[in-house]
Length: 509
Image (cartoon, rainbow, N blue to C red; front, top):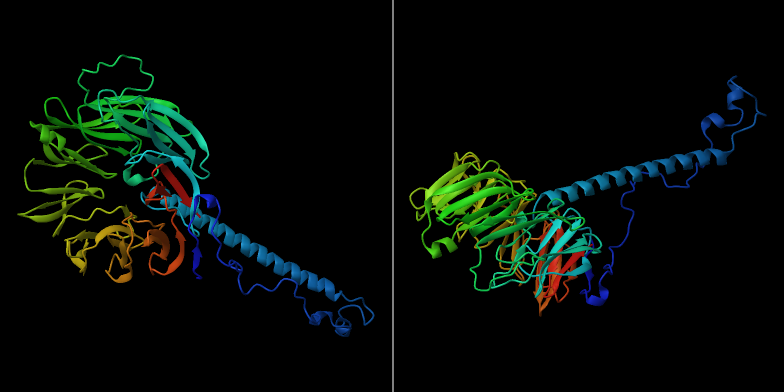
């Protein structure tokens, strides 16, 4: 494949596509007859007088079929083969593209297919920070905040056309804890229901109730639900307590707080109505302000790990506690796929399934991957600080070991991506075989891949270039300059989103 280099994008080139790859005849089989080729001699059955000599028809004076008519029949047949072949190949290609887009939408962190060099498609103002951009169906929703409060704005994901703006909160009163976030696990695409969270101390927009500046701020959070297509409010509810963490699971919100008595409380609640699906409350209590502030909640799409009054692993579908340990024990607990992993000095590491049953012994807890498409589901990847190692999920047997201090970032298409700062490398996730490495200086951005290509940044003299490489072979496919105002790139809902001081830019082929 020929390398294409595209000049750095500037604001004046927004919307202009980079130079395309040289064209060709891809998609048309080589064995299809050339259109317009005619036979250079008549068919044997049509030779003059042959049928008469065999006694089967008119004699030598009989009229022959014109040669041009036979050529026209052959030309039509060849054209029909070409049309059918191109149509079939087009249908197969469209089906593959549809599958790839659906796959990207279903795997958080994965980009939609990148068919060529990317350019800035559109821009929007947005607040900085986690949870300020979410893709809901075909709408990109961004958080926008100013002195008058917080708003949500919706844009068409493809064109960037503005669809709506909804004011959510008024200006913060008697507090500096003003924030507004719209969570999604691993910044994956969500349904048409937008769920956003704000501090309970921040007044709701339009609430005319007087605010007492001397009153103590209430502890808790408020959840607002909006329709992604229209921005219309479809629900709102609150949760009291000192917030330890929260996250979105399907169209619900899982929230953990420390209540007034010091108990850790975890609930899964309907995102629109706040109806409680299940509740977990700890037996132990937290007594100090510092301990309450240090309480945390980690989520996957299947399990939650609470570090509060107790160390607890909860199954998200039914709230079943898989393990509960007293706070203060030397134990590491991390969610892993639909189960969890634990490590203690006495026992080392262990892997557990969704029912809390021991599966395999490990020397450490598994690495947290930003992308995991399940292509190496039977392999557990972990880092010991001086090596990255792979283990059999069922037996705990070591499969391979790499002497590297790099951090495992993603497993896609049986390929393990590791990074040390901005330096990237690819390995076979099942065998540990080195596939490629990229050792140049670069900014430390998240893993960027569509499952076929991996995008790695390269920095030279303050200019950042985005290089597309084959995920498995590391061969360079194309490169393009990153707009100078972009400070970071990430995958959000399958889209390649850049951050600037003013907001976001969406890049696409």
